Length: 340
Ligand SMILES: [Mg+2]
Image (cartoon, rainbow, N blue to C red):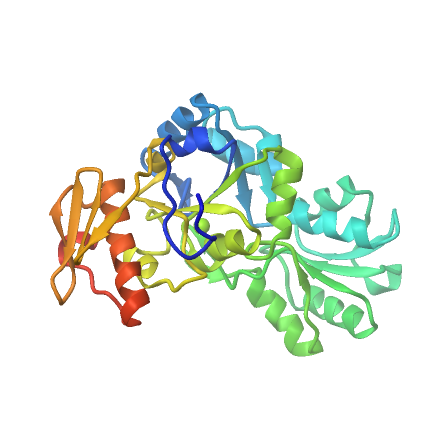
């Protein structure tokens, strides 16, 4: 990997699972979708682990404890997962606060059990009212948060206390659909105060730093489904990334990503961890990667040879599209066979 992060595809001579020593796995859209495991995810992760890759499951959701997340993952068949393999934005924000506040400080908590447990683990004392003399406010998602809690946070911030947030995701996926996330509740407090919180979750770097601190590793790989949080956060933190197509961001969105916002690698799903990501060669409107070949015919990119979902084909498509858009500054269209 000699290219600078975020500009072009990286290539390897070995499987990613042997090039890197730890994978930071985003959960929703990568490992599971809502209540169900992504098909093939457990098998792909077990294989990667067998090749020596340490797995760290990371989540912006601060409502559950690491143990509760581990239990959910184990229940879906993910390999050898315990609380030590899970890193949450609640843990990351608690670390930030413990570093900044006097030991044993009282903090006003607007959030759930996951956030409380993480703060207590760092020696901070959780209180629920301004009259209990907190020295800071922290906000994380919990479904029971209502107007009274949000108002208490607003009053505390107006009194001059520093404000922290586990994450600012505007939405949270639920079994019944998309619901307002912590970022929407943070916005309500922002409306009342005009203040800005210090944020720990993706795309901010605290969660990445927390993962390396807890799980270890010297050459991490971020694996995510969202360009705007997982991939941009990884780039900002100086971490190499793999984008998978099992969640929010589509192949077209990856193709459309500008320099500075691009993943290092791309694959259809987590099986990409156990593959070699061979170099793409581009010449006169045609890109080749291994036995895959794709071409741009003036209107869009189509496959000459290779399977639509294969990593080699995806790499050829993405590399060709980025090459074309970097020269012409126009969006590149994908042939229908390349779209889901
Ligand atoms: Mg995700």
